[in-house]
Length: 365
Image 1 (cartoon, rainbow, N blue to C red):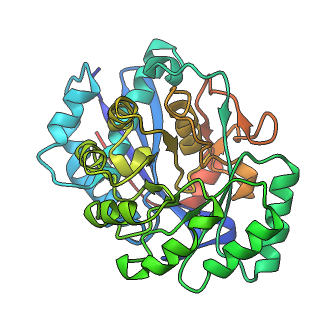
Image 2: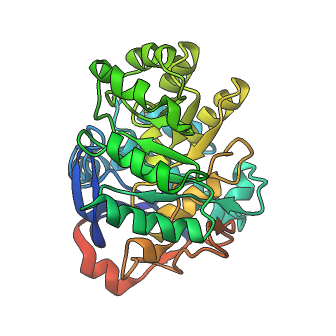
């Protein structure tokens, strides 16, 4: 497959409500869209690192720069029979998994288009439906949070994820667990704590959480392994798993019992498949995570979640959860509460909204 043209768009999609986590609030989703053209075929991809380097060291601006000025020119007009060949060419550039993911995901989507084969079939997905969970950010009050959780519970959400930060953690857990004692919860700390907070982690062992997601530093696995030996609640790693090697190392030192896979964070679909494989071999379940992407990014995550080892309900949302006007069509919607079907044809951009939401663009030919 030879890539003849690459079109890159930095877009900002307004959120219905701010998404508030331990690292701050997002009012728009800043995402990078990539259109790859090979002969008469083309495909779209999305990689979403958010506007600022809060979730990771990358930002929308850094991803746009590296793609348009460095990575895309590097691969243009070269013939790649496998995604490993493409990734090998990009290996000379250190880090920047979100930027690299845009091209890797684009390669897979283009292969899907050329072969007229759904992405889930290309990667070996077997699930006929994909299960999602309910997620809630930090709210203005515990009462508001409980009202929102009640809606999810009434719709039989298989699990509920709660964003926490210091000052919005233990009392919140006490309130929601006493209100919903039979609901499966886990918390997402977004790297907001340290080993000095061991008393907090021990205090929540009695709540029966599925796991604690990314409690410590975003680039740590060593301290996570120490925490894992000190508490009963399992640990899930998210931000720390930025590559295949990091996943292998985290598993080897016992830093986690679950792994969250976000294709952007780990460098694309190719690395997602490899992390899933080594996790499955080690008996570590994985689950799919999201970055507030458009319907296209969510659709790609749904495709990955059709693989067997994605056993925990994913962070997957209908378009109406975050956007009044999703940039890509058709929108992602549940076929029934918290269930998605695999995607036969990936969504396409609404050209008017693409023009409206574009911050800047670059065309590499």
